[in-house]
Length: 173
Image (cartoon, rainbow, N blue to C red; front, side, top):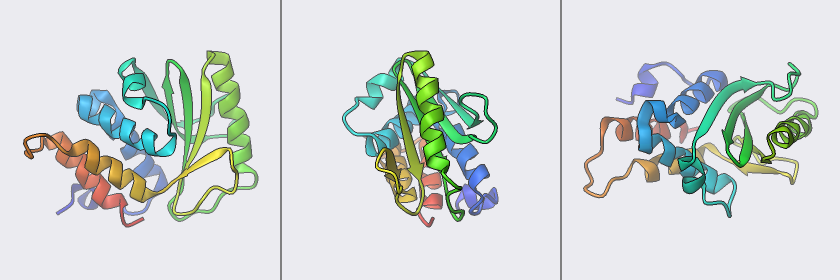
């Protein structure tokens, strides 16, 4: 039985985004959590050594208003020394009016204040209508979870199993 099914997350966007943010926190799973995030970011934004960047430290926030405007509440924001990545999570809901355009402005402004580079990623079962926004799917999250949870000796820790189970849970979105 999948623990995420038992937890009753179902297809709730806010709860699944919060669970994903928690799984990506090193305070939860240490290197396994960092690898999970690095694998996902490598799919979302190519050309950056995400594992190295994340080793330098990072923080993840949920339901963030990047510049204090409540109308621009980004589901997940990952901040490293050099990058600010806003991730908009969709499962069953559609995009709001000019939602991604507003998020691009907000995340870019936050990154500029931090002297970092900005990215916006859409995590959804559909593609972004805006070229500047990277599109990823829940299948990408599931793939990142599988890759990150593998170990050399084929015996996985509880954390790795938990991450893999989340990947199985979201693969149906």
